[in-house]
Length: 219
Ligand code: URA
Image (cartoon, helix red, strand yellow):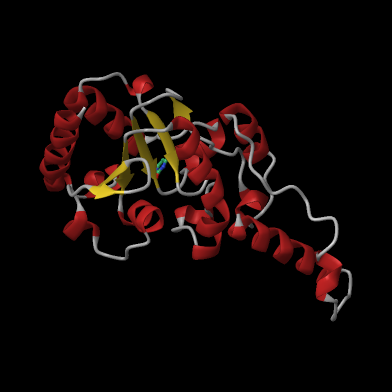
């Protein structure tokens, strides 16, 4: 909750700055702390995320892309951030990279897309499809942590370096870590390439097929 608390504090400080304050006492923020516990149901968590204004991405988004799929899924896929198509529909992975991901799930894992859960590191689209900043990713992180805690997947597939980095805290190149299993609290993290990387580098598809076949073996 530290990230959420810091983000709320920062928001209050910016508000005061806009109002002309150049000094404030720390004690101002020690009283009447808001309840920072995130809800214990996915529905309520989604509602809270849909109303979120904790970072700048909320100013330019069209829709919050919370995530979708089987809320009791054994496998959860985490991407980087919604793109333009996702931003206008509110659904994750429905653009070109989403189509490829769906094919891979259905043809290699041999389960319908609706059987897994799909989400992202940040729930709002960064302008110009930029990589989310560290502040945006950290501010949004409590929502993802809570999503994982409520869905309780056995396997979380990190799609691409950004997803792997924020889920593991490790900066290693995705090419080095892909296809390995990392024990996290309550689930196994499996990094692989992001489908948008595969659209640009189709020759890397065979590695993702290998990673997914390995995941299928674990199921
Ligand atoms: N890319 C992502 O990382 N997530 C989406 O939802 C769509 C494209």
